[in-house]
Length: 634
Ligand code: AHR
Image 1 (spheres, rainbow, N blue to C red):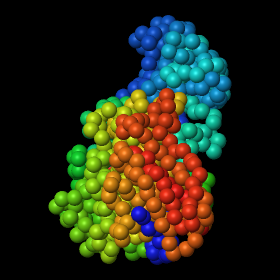
Image 2: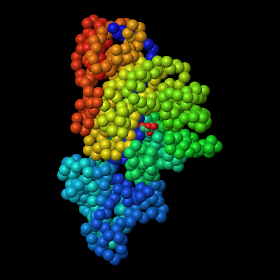
Image 3: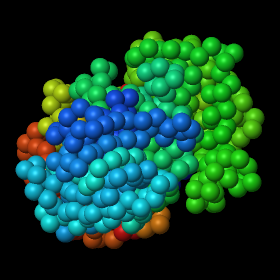
Image 4: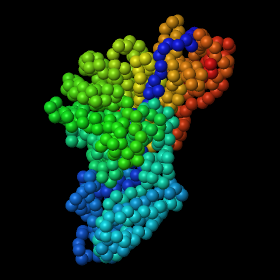
Protein backbone atom coordinates (compact mmCIF):
# COMPACT_ATOMS: atom_id res chain seq x y z
CA UNK A 1 0.00 0.00 0.00
CA UNK A 2 1.26 3.38 -0.97
CA UNK A 3 0.64 6.64 0.85
CA UNK A 4 0.71 9.98 -0.89
CA UNK A 5 0.82 13.04 1.31
CA UNK A 6 -0.59 16.24 -0.14
CA UNK A 7 1.12 18.30 2.56
CA UNK A 8 3.74 20.73 1.33
CA UNK A 9 7.28 19.31 1.25
CA UNK A 10 8.67 22.77 0.52
CA UNK A 11 10.47 21.33 -2.52
CA UNK A 12 9.73 22.86 -5.89
CA UNK A 13 10.00 21.01 -9.17
CA UNK A 14 12.09 23.45 -11.18
CA UNK A 15 10.62 24.56 -14.53
CA UNK A 16 13.98 23.41 -15.94
CA UNK A 17 13.55 19.84 -14.64
CA UNK A 18 13.04 18.33 -18.11
CA UNK A 19 14.87 19.92 -21.00
CA UNK A 20 16.63 19.05 -24.23
CA UNK A 21 20.26 18.50 -25.09
CA UNK A 22 20.97 19.53 -28.65
CA UNK A 23 24.20 18.58 -30.36
CA UNK A 24 25.16 18.73 -34.02
CA UNK A 25 25.89 15.01 -34.16
CA UNK A 26 24.23 12.48 -36.51
CA UNK A 27 23.56 15.29 -39.07
CA UNK A 28 21.27 16.95 -36.57
CA UNK A 29 21.98 20.47 -37.90
CA UNK A 30 23.06 20.54 -41.57
CA UNK A 31 20.98 17.79 -43.15
CA UNK A 32 18.58 17.85 -40.19
CA UNK A 33 17.08 20.67 -38.17
CA UNK A 34 18.56 23.35 -40.42
CA UNK A 35 16.34 22.85 -43.44
CA UNK A 36 18.92 23.66 -46.16
CA UNK A 37 18.77 20.87 -48.77
CA UNK A 38 22.00 21.62 -50.65
CA UNK A 39 25.22 20.26 -49.22
CA UNK A 40 28.32 22.44 -49.59
CA UNK A 41 26.20 25.22 -51.06
CA UNK A 42 29.03 27.72 -51.27
CA UNK A 43 31.96 25.42 -52.04
CA UNK A 44 33.63 26.00 -48.67
CA UNK A 45 34.27 22.33 -47.80
CA UNK A 46 38.03 21.55 -47.72
CA UNK A 47 37.36 19.43 -50.81
CA UNK A 48 35.38 22.22 -52.44
CA UNK A 49 33.47 20.01 -54.85
CA UNK A 50 32.33 17.51 -52.23
CA UNK A 51 28.60 17.01 -52.66
CA UNK A 52 28.76 18.17 -56.30
CA UNK A 53 29.11 15.98 -59.38
CA UNK A 54 29.64 16.72 -63.05
CA UNK A 55 29.21 13.32 -64.69
CA UNK A 56 29.40 14.43 -68.29
CA UNK A 57 32.24 16.90 -68.09
CA UNK A 58 35.55 16.56 -69.82
CA UNK A 59 38.66 18.40 -68.76
CA UNK A 60 38.57 22.17 -68.76
CA UNK A 61 39.69 23.58 -72.05
CA UNK A 62 39.22 27.11 -73.25
CA UNK A 63 38.36 26.14 -76.79
CA UNK A 64 36.67 22.77 -76.51
CA UNK A 65 32.90 22.50 -76.68
CA UNK A 66 32.44 21.17 -73.18
CA UNK A 67 32.42 22.47 -69.62
CA UNK A 68 34.35 22.11 -66.44
CA UNK A 69 33.67 23.99 -63.29
CA UNK A 70 36.55 24.96 -61.09
CA UNK A 71 36.64 26.58 -57.71
CA UNK A 72 38.08 30.06 -57.36
CA UNK A 73 39.14 31.96 -54.28
CA UNK A 74 37.84 35.45 -53.64
CA UNK A 75 40.58 38.02 -53.74
CA UNK A 76 38.94 39.70 -50.79
CA UNK A 77 36.78 37.11 -49.00
CA UNK A 78 33.90 38.23 -46.82
CA UNK A 79 34.22 36.46 -43.50
CA UNK A 80 34.00 32.73 -44.05
CA UNK A 81 32.91 32.97 -47.67
CA UNK A 82 36.22 32.16 -49.30
CA UNK A 83 35.30 30.51 -52.56
CA UNK A 84 32.95 30.36 -55.49
CA UNK A 85 32.61 28.17 -58.53
CA UNK A 86 33.87 29.47 -61.87
CA UNK A 87 32.20 27.55 -64.64
CA UNK A 88 33.20 27.38 -68.28
CA UNK A 89 30.71 25.96 -70.76
CA UNK A 90 31.14 25.89 -74.51
CA UNK A 91 27.77 25.42 -76.18
CA UNK A 92 27.30 22.14 -74.38
CA UNK A 93 23.91 21.44 -72.90
CA UNK A 94 25.00 17.92 -72.00
CA UNK A 95 27.23 19.40 -69.33
CA UNK A 96 25.35 18.81 -66.09
CA UNK A 97 26.24 19.87 -62.59
CA UNK A 98 24.53 17.95 -59.77
CA UNK A 99 24.19 18.43 -56.05
CA UNK A 100 23.35 15.29 -54.09
CA UNK A 101 22.05 16.99 -50.96
CA UNK A 102 22.47 15.31 -47.61
CA UNK A 103 22.30 11.69 -48.73
CA UNK A 104 19.76 12.84 -51.29
CA UNK A 105 17.33 15.75 -51.29
CA UNK A 106 13.94 14.99 -49.77
CA UNK A 107 11.01 16.68 -51.52
CA UNK A 108 7.28 16.20 -51.12
CA UNK A 109 4.65 16.20 -53.85
CA UNK A 110 3.04 19.62 -54.34
CA UNK A 111 5.21 21.20 -51.66
CA UNK A 112 7.02 24.45 -52.45
CA UNK A 113 10.78 24.94 -52.26
CA UNK A 114 12.71 28.22 -52.32
CA UNK A 115 15.62 28.08 -54.71
CA UNK A 116 18.29 30.76 -54.75
CA UNK A 117 21.61 31.19 -56.52
CA UNK A 118 24.21 33.89 -56.23
CA UNK A 119 25.60 34.57 -59.70
CA UNK A 120 28.12 36.96 -61.22
CA UNK A 121 30.25 37.61 -64.28
CA UNK A 122 28.06 35.83 -66.81
CA UNK A 123 30.12 36.14 -69.95
CA UNK A 124 28.59 34.32 -72.89
CA UNK A 125 26.36 32.16 -70.66
CA UNK A 126 22.82 33.29 -71.35
CA UNK A 127 20.74 30.89 -69.36
CA UNK A 128 20.85 28.35 -66.54
CA UNK A 129 18.32 25.56 -66.28
CA UNK A 130 17.94 24.42 -62.72
CA UNK A 131 15.91 21.31 -61.97
CA UNK A 132 15.10 18.84 -59.27
CA UNK A 133 15.38 15.32 -60.63
CA UNK A 134 14.64 11.92 -59.16
CA UNK A 135 17.04 8.98 -59.06
CA UNK A 136 16.19 8.11 -62.69
CA UNK A 137 16.73 11.67 -63.86
CA UNK A 138 13.03 12.47 -64.28
CA UNK A 139 12.35 16.15 -63.71
CA UNK A 140 10.30 16.94 -60.59
CA UNK A 141 10.46 20.72 -60.91
CA UNK A 142 12.50 23.14 -62.97
CA UNK A 143 13.15 26.79 -63.69
CA UNK A 144 15.15 28.95 -66.09
CA UNK A 145 17.43 31.67 -64.88
CA UNK A 146 18.77 34.48 -67.06
CA UNK A 147 21.80 36.09 -65.47
CA UNK A 148 21.72 39.80 -66.25
CA UNK A 149 24.30 41.43 -63.99
CA UNK A 150 28.05 41.53 -63.79
CA UNK A 151 28.08 41.93 -60.03
CA UNK A 152 27.00 39.26 -57.58
CA UNK A 153 23.23 39.07 -57.62
CA UNK A 154 20.78 36.63 -56.03
CA UNK A 155 18.34 34.91 -58.39
CA UNK A 156 15.32 33.21 -56.85
CA UNK A 157 12.61 30.80 -57.93
CA UNK A 158 10.04 28.58 -56.29
CA UNK A 159 9.94 24.88 -57.12
CA UNK A 160 6.79 22.80 -56.71
CA UNK A 161 7.67 19.13 -56.80
CA UNK A 162 5.38 16.89 -58.87
CA UNK A 163 6.34 13.84 -56.81
CA UNK A 164 7.52 12.78 -53.38
CA UNK A 165 11.15 11.69 -53.56
CA UNK A 166 13.62 11.04 -50.75
CA UNK A 167 16.73 11.07 -52.89
CA UNK A 168 16.25 13.81 -55.45
CA UNK A 169 19.19 15.78 -56.84
CA UNK A 170 19.59 19.34 -58.01
CA UNK A 171 20.72 19.58 -61.63
CA UNK A 172 22.11 22.67 -63.35
CA UNK A 173 22.68 22.95 -67.10
CA UNK A 174 23.87 25.96 -69.07
CA UNK A 175 23.09 27.64 -72.39
CA UNK A 176 25.71 29.66 -74.18
CA UNK A 177 29.40 29.80 -74.81
CA UNK A 178 31.51 31.31 -72.05
CA UNK A 179 31.80 31.51 -68.27
CA UNK A 180 29.78 32.21 -65.15
CA UNK A 181 30.53 32.43 -61.43
CA UNK A 182 28.24 30.78 -58.86
CA UNK A 183 28.00 30.83 -55.08
CA UNK A 184 25.43 30.06 -52.36
CA UNK A 185 23.28 27.65 -54.32
CA UNK A 186 20.49 27.00 -51.89
CA UNK A 187 17.18 25.18 -51.63
CA UNK A 188 14.85 25.24 -48.64
CA UNK A 189 11.32 23.99 -48.08
CA UNK A 190 8.97 26.97 -47.95
CA UNK A 191 7.07 25.42 -45.09
CA UNK A 192 9.52 25.79 -42.23
CA UNK A 193 9.02 26.15 -38.47
CA UNK A 194 6.97 29.34 -37.93
CA UNK A 195 7.22 29.97 -41.68
CA UNK A 196 10.63 31.62 -41.28
CA UNK A 197 12.36 31.96 -44.63
CA UNK A 198 15.28 29.54 -44.89
CA UNK A 199 14.58 28.38 -41.37
CA UNK A 200 14.25 25.12 -39.48
CA UNK A 201 12.63 21.85 -40.46
CA UNK A 202 9.09 22.03 -39.19
CA UNK A 203 8.43 18.37 -38.32
CA UNK A 204 11.60 18.23 -36.23
CA UNK A 205 10.90 21.41 -34.26
CA UNK A 206 7.35 20.19 -33.70
CA UNK A 207 8.76 17.06 -32.10
CA UNK A 208 10.95 19.23 -29.88
CA UNK A 209 8.00 21.43 -29.02
CA UNK A 210 6.05 18.32 -28.01
CA UNK A 211 8.65 17.76 -25.30
CA UNK A 212 7.63 21.03 -23.62
CA UNK A 213 11.27 21.58 -22.69
CA UNK A 214 12.25 23.70 -19.71
CA UNK A 215 15.63 24.46 -21.27
CA UNK A 216 17.59 23.99 -24.46
CA UNK A 217 21.22 23.06 -24.02
CA UNK A 218 23.37 23.74 -27.10
CA UNK A 219 25.53 23.25 -29.17
CA UNK A 220 26.80 19.99 -27.56
CA UNK A 221 28.53 17.79 -26.48
CA UNK A 222 31.99 17.07 -27.72
CA UNK A 223 31.65 19.47 -30.66
CA UNK A 224 31.99 22.32 -28.19
CA UNK A 225 35.53 21.21 -27.38
CA UNK A 226 36.81 20.38 -30.87
CA UNK A 227 39.44 17.77 -31.64
CA UNK A 228 42.01 20.54 -31.50
CA UNK A 229 41.66 23.98 -29.99
CA UNK A 230 41.63 25.56 -33.43
CA UNK A 231 38.71 23.31 -34.36
CA UNK A 232 36.62 24.10 -31.30
CA UNK A 233 33.19 25.65 -31.61
CA UNK A 234 33.54 29.44 -31.56
CA UNK A 235 30.09 30.91 -31.15
CA UNK A 236 31.07 34.32 -32.49
CA UNK A 237 31.77 32.75 -35.90
CA UNK A 238 28.19 31.48 -36.04
CA UNK A 239 26.32 34.80 -35.91
CA UNK A 240 25.85 37.62 -38.39
CA UNK A 241 25.11 37.19 -42.11
CA UNK A 242 24.78 33.51 -43.00
CA UNK A 243 27.08 33.76 -45.98
CA UNK A 244 29.93 35.06 -43.84
CA UNK A 245 29.80 32.31 -41.21
CA UNK A 246 32.94 30.26 -41.42
CA UNK A 247 32.61 26.53 -42.06
CA UNK A 248 34.12 24.14 -39.52
CA UNK A 249 34.85 20.44 -39.68
CA UNK A 250 32.44 18.59 -37.42
CA UNK A 251 34.01 16.75 -34.49
CA UNK A 252 31.94 13.73 -35.58
CA UNK A 253 33.33 13.87 -39.11
CA UNK A 254 35.35 10.66 -39.20
CA UNK A 255 37.63 8.45 -37.20
CA UNK A 256 36.32 9.43 -33.78
CA UNK A 257 32.77 8.52 -34.61
CA UNK A 258 31.27 5.04 -34.51
CA UNK A 259 30.35 5.52 -38.17
CA UNK A 260 32.59 7.64 -40.36
CA UNK A 261 31.08 10.67 -42.11
CA UNK A 262 33.83 12.41 -44.09
CA UNK A 263 31.26 14.82 -45.53
CA UNK A 264 30.20 16.17 -42.12
CA UNK A 265 30.83 19.91 -41.71
CA UNK A 266 29.15 22.73 -39.86
CA UNK A 267 27.90 25.52 -42.11
CA UNK A 268 26.52 27.30 -39.03
CA UNK A 269 23.33 28.22 -40.85
CA UNK A 270 22.11 27.08 -37.46
CA UNK A 271 24.23 29.26 -35.21
CA UNK A 272 23.95 30.79 -31.77
CA UNK A 273 21.37 33.40 -32.77
CA UNK A 274 19.14 30.63 -34.13
CA UNK A 275 19.66 28.52 -31.00
CA UNK A 276 18.61 31.42 -28.78
CA UNK A 277 15.60 32.04 -31.00
CA UNK A 278 14.65 28.38 -30.88
CA UNK A 279 14.88 28.43 -27.08
CA UNK A 280 12.56 31.40 -27.06
CA UNK A 281 10.13 29.70 -29.45
CA UNK A 282 10.02 26.61 -27.28
CA UNK A 283 9.64 28.57 -24.06
CA UNK A 284 12.90 26.97 -22.92
CA UNK A 285 15.76 28.63 -21.05
CA UNK A 286 18.86 28.80 -23.24
CA UNK A 287 21.81 26.86 -21.80
CA UNK A 288 24.87 27.36 -24.01
CA UNK A 289 28.03 25.40 -23.29
CA UNK A 290 31.40 26.87 -24.23
CA UNK A 291 34.89 25.44 -24.61
CA UNK A 292 37.21 25.98 -21.63
CA UNK A 293 40.60 25.99 -23.35
CA UNK A 294 40.84 22.20 -23.55
CA UNK A 295 40.28 20.24 -26.75
CA UNK A 296 38.28 17.02 -26.41
CA UNK A 297 40.18 14.80 -23.98
CA UNK A 298 39.07 11.73 -25.92
CA UNK A 299 40.91 13.20 -28.95
CA UNK A 300 44.03 15.35 -28.70
CA UNK A 301 43.34 16.78 -25.26
CA UNK A 302 45.22 19.89 -26.43
CA UNK A 303 45.47 22.49 -23.66
CA UNK A 304 45.75 26.23 -23.84
CA UNK A 305 48.38 27.41 -21.32
CA UNK A 306 46.76 29.16 -18.37
CA UNK A 307 48.48 32.43 -19.21
CA UNK A 308 46.85 32.36 -22.66
CA UNK A 309 43.32 31.68 -21.48
CA UNK A 310 42.08 35.27 -21.81
CA UNK A 311 40.61 35.01 -25.33
CA UNK A 312 38.59 31.98 -24.22
CA UNK A 313 37.20 33.80 -21.21
CA UNK A 314 36.49 36.78 -23.43
CA UNK A 315 34.36 34.52 -25.66
CA UNK A 316 32.21 33.78 -22.63
CA UNK A 317 31.94 37.44 -21.63
CA UNK A 318 31.05 38.38 -25.19
CA UNK A 319 28.40 35.70 -25.33
CA UNK A 320 26.71 37.04 -22.21
CA UNK A 321 26.77 40.49 -23.79
CA UNK A 322 25.35 39.08 -27.04
CA UNK A 323 22.50 37.38 -25.19
CA UNK A 324 21.65 39.94 -22.53
CA UNK A 325 23.54 43.13 -23.32
CA UNK A 326 22.07 46.50 -24.10
CA UNK A 327 21.74 47.20 -27.82
CA UNK A 328 24.40 49.89 -27.44
CA UNK A 329 27.05 47.36 -26.46
CA UNK A 330 29.04 45.91 -29.38
CA UNK A 331 27.58 42.39 -29.09
CA UNK A 332 24.14 43.61 -28.05
CA UNK A 333 24.14 45.58 -31.29
CA UNK A 334 24.96 42.45 -33.29
CA UNK A 335 21.90 40.79 -31.72
CA UNK A 336 19.77 43.83 -32.52
CA UNK A 337 21.04 43.96 -36.11
CA UNK A 338 20.04 40.33 -36.49
CA UNK A 339 16.48 41.34 -35.63
CA UNK A 340 16.27 40.74 -31.89
CA UNK A 341 16.76 43.91 -29.84
CA UNK A 342 15.19 42.29 -26.76
CA UNK A 343 17.62 40.31 -24.63
CA UNK A 344 17.53 36.52 -24.71
CA UNK A 345 17.43 36.16 -20.93
CA UNK A 346 20.55 34.04 -20.51
CA UNK A 347 20.84 32.68 -16.96
CA UNK A 348 23.00 29.56 -17.27
CA UNK A 349 26.31 29.10 -19.01
CA UNK A 350 28.30 25.86 -19.18
CA UNK A 351 32.11 26.00 -19.05
CA UNK A 352 33.57 22.91 -20.69
CA UNK A 353 31.70 19.78 -21.66
CA UNK A 354 33.09 16.45 -20.47
CA UNK A 355 36.35 17.75 -19.04
CA UNK A 356 38.04 16.34 -16.02
CA UNK A 357 41.12 16.40 -13.84
CA UNK A 358 43.15 19.27 -12.30
CA UNK A 359 43.71 20.94 -15.70
CA UNK A 360 39.99 21.45 -16.07
CA UNK A 361 39.44 22.94 -12.65
CA UNK A 362 42.42 25.28 -12.99
CA UNK A 363 40.76 26.68 -16.08
CA UNK A 364 37.23 26.64 -14.72
CA UNK A 365 38.36 28.67 -11.71
CA UNK A 366 39.67 31.46 -13.93
CA UNK A 367 36.43 31.58 -15.93
CA UNK A 368 34.39 31.60 -12.72
CA UNK A 369 36.37 34.41 -11.17
CA UNK A 370 36.24 36.75 -14.16
CA UNK A 371 32.63 36.01 -15.16
CA UNK A 372 31.51 36.12 -11.53
CA UNK A 373 32.95 39.58 -11.14
CA UNK A 374 31.30 41.04 -14.23
CA UNK A 375 28.09 39.01 -14.33
CA UNK A 376 27.38 37.64 -10.83
CA UNK A 377 23.83 36.80 -11.86
CA UNK A 378 24.95 34.16 -14.38
CA UNK A 379 24.92 30.60 -13.03
CA UNK A 380 27.88 28.64 -14.32
CA UNK A 381 27.66 24.94 -15.04
CA UNK A 382 30.76 22.87 -14.28
CA UNK A 383 31.37 19.14 -14.76
CA UNK A 384 33.06 16.21 -13.03
CA UNK A 385 33.82 14.70 -16.46
CA UNK A 386 32.15 11.87 -18.37
CA UNK A 387 32.10 9.58 -15.35
CA UNK A 388 29.34 8.52 -13.03
CA UNK A 389 31.63 7.13 -10.34
CA UNK A 390 35.28 6.36 -9.54
CA UNK A 391 38.26 8.39 -8.35
CA UNK A 392 38.14 11.04 -11.04
CA UNK A 393 34.45 11.58 -10.43
CA UNK A 394 35.05 11.95 -6.69
CA UNK A 395 37.90 14.35 -7.43
CA UNK A 396 35.61 16.39 -9.68
CA UNK A 397 32.95 16.68 -7.01
CA UNK A 398 35.50 17.68 -4.37
CA UNK A 399 36.80 20.40 -6.66
CA UNK A 400 33.34 21.64 -7.49
CA UNK A 401 32.48 21.95 -3.82
CA UNK A 402 35.71 23.79 -3.17
CA UNK A 403 35.00 26.20 -6.00
CA UNK A 404 31.45 26.74 -4.84
CA UNK A 405 29.99 25.51 -8.13
CA UNK A 406 26.23 25.92 -8.32
CA UNK A 407 25.39 23.33 -10.98
CA UNK A 408 27.23 20.12 -11.90
CA UNK A 409 26.73 18.52 -15.30
CA UNK A 410 26.71 14.72 -14.91
CA UNK A 411 26.63 12.30 -17.85
CA UNK A 412 25.80 8.63 -17.94
CA UNK A 413 25.39 6.27 -20.86
CA UNK A 414 24.80 2.96 -19.10
CA UNK A 415 22.93 -0.33 -19.31
CA UNK A 416 19.20 -0.51 -18.46
CA UNK A 417 20.16 -2.43 -15.32
CA UNK A 418 22.38 0.45 -14.21
CA UNK A 419 19.42 2.80 -14.51
CA UNK A 420 17.30 0.53 -12.34
CA UNK A 421 20.09 0.12 -9.80
CA UNK A 422 20.60 3.88 -9.68
CA UNK A 423 17.00 4.97 -9.16
CA UNK A 424 18.16 5.90 -5.65
CA UNK A 425 21.34 7.60 -6.89
CA UNK A 426 20.46 11.06 -5.63
CA UNK A 427 18.79 10.00 -2.38
CA UNK A 428 22.13 10.21 -0.62
CA UNK A 429 23.64 13.21 -2.45
CA UNK A 430 25.06 15.99 -0.33
CA UNK A 431 22.36 18.62 0.05
CA UNK A 432 24.99 21.31 0.65
CA UNK A 433 27.06 20.81 -2.50
CA UNK A 434 26.39 21.79 -6.12
CA UNK A 435 22.98 20.97 -7.55
CA UNK A 436 22.76 18.44 -10.37
CA UNK A 437 22.21 18.94 -14.08
CA UNK A 438 21.88 15.40 -15.47
CA UNK A 439 22.95 16.82 -18.82
CA UNK A 440 23.35 13.65 -20.89
CA UNK A 441 21.95 10.24 -20.23
CA UNK A 442 20.52 7.27 -22.07
CA UNK A 443 20.11 3.57 -21.38
CA UNK A 444 22.23 1.57 -23.80
CA UNK A 445 21.01 -1.94 -24.44
CA UNK A 446 23.58 -4.45 -25.69
CA UNK A 447 24.41 -3.81 -29.35
CA UNK A 448 24.95 -0.07 -29.17
CA UNK A 449 25.90 0.08 -32.86
CA UNK A 450 22.50 -1.15 -34.06
CA UNK A 451 20.96 2.29 -34.38
CA UNK A 452 17.19 2.69 -34.12
CA UNK A 453 16.69 -0.87 -32.83
CA UNK A 454 18.39 0.15 -29.65
CA UNK A 455 15.70 2.67 -28.78
CA UNK A 456 13.62 -0.15 -27.40
CA UNK A 457 11.09 -0.38 -24.64
CA UNK A 458 13.60 -1.99 -22.26
CA UNK A 459 15.76 1.12 -22.40
CA UNK A 460 12.84 3.53 -22.13
CA UNK A 461 11.30 1.68 -19.21
CA UNK A 462 14.55 1.67 -17.25
CA UNK A 463 14.97 5.40 -17.89
CA UNK A 464 11.42 6.01 -16.63
CA UNK A 465 12.18 4.10 -13.41
CA UNK A 466 15.34 6.16 -12.98
CA UNK A 467 13.45 9.39 -13.70
CA UNK A 468 11.13 8.79 -10.75
CA UNK A 469 14.37 8.97 -8.73
CA UNK A 470 15.35 12.25 -10.40
CA UNK A 471 11.95 13.64 -9.56
CA UNK A 472 11.96 12.39 -5.96
CA UNK A 473 15.19 14.33 -5.53
CA UNK A 474 14.01 17.56 -7.10
CA UNK A 475 15.71 19.50 -4.29
CA UNK A 476 19.08 18.37 -5.71
CA UNK A 477 18.33 17.61 -9.34
CA UNK A 478 17.36 20.81 -11.12
CA UNK A 479 17.83 19.94 -14.78
CA UNK A 480 17.86 16.75 -16.83
CA UNK A 481 18.16 15.87 -20.52
CA UNK A 482 18.36 12.69 -22.60
CA UNK A 483 21.19 12.54 -25.16
CA UNK A 484 21.82 12.66 -28.02
CA UNK A 485 18.68 14.27 -29.34
CA UNK A 486 18.51 13.53 -33.07
CA UNK A 487 19.87 11.25 -35.74
CA UNK A 488 19.59 11.00 -39.50
CA UNK A 489 18.84 7.36 -40.27
CA UNK A 490 21.15 7.53 -43.28
CA UNK A 491 24.07 9.29 -41.63
CA UNK A 492 24.36 8.80 -37.91
CA UNK A 493 27.44 8.35 -35.74
CA UNK A 494 25.93 7.58 -32.34
CA UNK A 495 22.98 5.52 -31.16
CA UNK A 496 20.58 5.46 -29.42
CA UNK A 497 19.03 8.89 -30.02
CA UNK A 498 15.77 10.46 -28.95
CA UNK A 499 14.43 11.32 -32.43
CA UNK A 500 15.15 9.62 -35.74
CA UNK A 501 14.57 11.26 -39.09
CA UNK A 502 15.36 10.84 -42.75
CA UNK A 503 14.97 13.24 -45.65
CA UNK A 504 11.19 13.10 -45.47
CA UNK A 505 10.00 11.79 -42.13
CA UNK A 506 10.72 11.76 -38.43
CA UNK A 507 9.50 10.03 -35.31
CA UNK A 508 9.95 10.07 -31.56
CA UNK A 509 11.39 6.89 -30.09
CA UNK A 510 10.06 4.98 -27.08
CA UNK A 511 12.49 7.09 -25.03
CA UNK A 512 10.99 10.23 -26.58
CA UNK A 513 7.54 9.14 -25.44
CA UNK A 514 8.86 8.71 -21.90
CA UNK A 515 10.51 12.13 -21.89
CA UNK A 516 7.36 13.68 -23.28
CA UNK A 517 5.20 12.05 -20.65
CA UNK A 518 7.39 13.18 -17.77
CA UNK A 519 8.01 16.68 -19.11
CA UNK A 520 4.34 17.36 -19.76
CA UNK A 521 3.46 16.15 -16.27
CA UNK A 522 6.31 17.59 -14.28
CA UNK A 523 4.15 19.45 -11.78
CA UNK A 524 5.33 22.33 -9.62
CA UNK A 525 5.79 20.84 -6.14
CA UNK A 526 7.23 17.56 -4.91
CA UNK A 527 5.05 15.35 -2.72
CA UNK A 528 5.96 12.36 -0.67
CA UNK A 529 4.88 8.91 -1.86
CA UNK A 530 5.91 6.02 0.37
CA UNK A 531 5.35 2.40 1.16
CA UNK A 532 5.78 1.56 4.84
CA UNK A 533 7.33 4.98 5.29
CA UNK A 534 9.98 4.47 2.58
CA UNK A 535 10.16 5.61 -1.06
CA UNK A 536 9.19 2.98 -3.62
CA UNK A 537 12.45 2.13 -5.40
CA UNK A 538 12.32 -1.28 -7.01
CA UNK A 539 10.30 -3.13 -4.37
CA UNK A 540 8.49 -5.75 -6.50
CA UNK A 541 10.04 -3.91 -9.48
CA UNK A 542 7.85 -0.86 -8.82
CA UNK A 543 9.09 2.72 -8.80
CA UNK A 544 7.03 5.81 -7.98
CA UNK A 545 7.09 9.57 -7.57
CA UNK A 546 4.41 12.14 -6.82
CA UNK A 547 4.02 15.85 -7.51
CA UNK A 548 1.27 18.38 -7.54
CA UNK A 549 0.69 21.05 -10.10
CA UNK A 550 -0.51 24.18 -8.35
CA UNK A 551 -1.43 25.85 -11.65
CA UNK A 552 -3.67 22.98 -12.72
CA UNK A 553 -4.62 22.13 -9.16
CA UNK A 554 -3.76 18.52 -9.89
CA UNK A 555 -2.13 15.59 -8.15
CA UNK A 556 0.17 13.65 -10.47
CA UNK A 557 1.48 10.17 -9.62
CA UNK A 558 4.01 8.31 -11.72
CA UNK A 559 4.30 4.56 -11.28
CA UNK A 560 6.69 2.34 -13.25
CA UNK A 561 6.52 -1.43 -13.22
CA UNK A 562 9.63 -3.02 -14.74
CA UNK A 563 8.62 -6.64 -14.11
CA UNK A 564 6.61 -8.64 -16.62
CA UNK A 565 3.76 -9.33 -14.20
CA UNK A 566 0.97 -6.95 -13.35
CA UNK A 567 0.65 -5.62 -9.80
CA UNK A 568 -2.32 -4.41 -7.85
CA UNK A 569 -1.64 -1.26 -5.92
CA UNK A 570 -3.60 0.72 -3.39
CA UNK A 571 -2.71 4.36 -2.97
CA UNK A 572 -4.04 6.24 0.03
CA UNK A 573 -4.12 9.99 -0.46
CA UNK A 574 -3.84 11.92 2.78
CA UNK A 575 -3.33 15.50 3.87
CA UNK A 576 -6.03 17.01 1.64
CA UNK A 577 -8.93 16.27 -0.62
CA UNK A 578 -8.95 15.03 -4.21
CA UNK A 579 -11.78 14.45 -6.65
CA UNK A 580 -13.07 10.92 -7.09
CA UNK A 581 -12.39 10.87 -10.85
CA UNK A 582 -9.25 11.34 -12.84
CA UNK A 583 -7.26 10.03 -15.79
CA UNK A 584 -4.52 7.47 -16.21
CA UNK A 585 -2.06 7.89 -19.06
CA UNK A 586 -0.06 4.76 -19.61
CA UNK A 587 2.30 2.89 -21.86
CA UNK A 588 2.78 -0.86 -21.56
CA UNK A 589 4.55 -3.31 -23.87
CA UNK A 590 4.91 -7.05 -23.52
CA UNK A 591 7.90 -6.98 -25.83
CA UNK A 592 10.91 -5.31 -24.23
CA UNK A 593 12.42 -4.95 -27.68
CA UNK A 594 9.43 -3.04 -29.09
CA UNK A 595 10.44 0.12 -30.93
CA UNK A 596 8.87 3.00 -32.78
CA UNK A 597 9.94 3.33 -36.41
CA UNK A 598 9.24 5.21 -39.64
CA UNK A 599 6.66 2.52 -40.45
CA UNK A 600 5.07 2.57 -37.00
CA UNK A 601 6.03 5.91 -35.47
CA UNK A 602 3.66 5.70 -32.52
CA UNK A 603 3.59 1.97 -31.87
CA UNK A 604 4.81 2.69 -28.35
CA UNK A 605 2.81 5.69 -27.22
CA UNK A 606 0.52 6.56 -24.33
CA UNK A 607 -3.13 5.59 -23.98
CA UNK A 608 -5.52 7.54 -21.81
CA UNK A 609 -8.31 6.10 -19.66
CA UNK A 610 -10.57 7.30 -16.89
CA UNK A 611 -10.08 6.29 -13.27
CA UNK A 612 -12.32 6.36 -10.23
CA UNK A 613 -11.28 6.73 -6.62
CA UNK A 614 -13.04 5.44 -3.59
CA UNK A 615 -12.84 8.50 -1.36
CA UNK A 616 -9.13 9.00 -0.74
CA UNK A 617 -8.22 5.55 -2.05
CA UNK A 618 -6.96 4.79 -5.55
CA UNK A 619 -6.91 1.12 -6.42
CA UNK A 620 -5.32 0.10 -9.67
CA UNK A 621 -3.84 -2.76 -11.58
CA UNK A 622 -0.45 -1.82 -12.96
CA UNK A 623 0.33 -3.84 -16.11
CA UNK A 624 3.67 -5.56 -16.51
CA UNK A 625 6.40 -3.45 -18.15
CA UNK A 626 4.43 -0.25 -17.92
CA UNK A 627 4.58 3.40 -17.04
CA UNK A 628 1.41 5.00 -15.69
CA UNK A 629 0.69 8.58 -14.83
CA UNK A 630 -2.37 9.25 -12.71
CA UNK A 631 -3.80 12.75 -12.82
CA UNK A 632 -6.39 13.66 -10.25
CA UNK A 633 -7.81 17.13 -9.69
CA UNK A 634 -7.54 18.38 -6.15
O1 AHR B 1 25.92 12.63 -26.78
C1 AHR B 1 27.02 12.18 -27.50
C2 AHR B 1 28.33 12.54 -26.83
O2 AHR B 1 28.43 11.89 -25.62
C3 AHR B 1 28.50 13.98 -26.46
O3 AHR B 1 29.00 14.72 -27.50
C4 AHR B 1 29.50 13.93 -25.36
O4 AHR B 1 29.34 14.99 -24.45
C5 AHR B 1 29.29 12.57 -24.75
O5 AHR B 1 30.48 11.88 -24.68
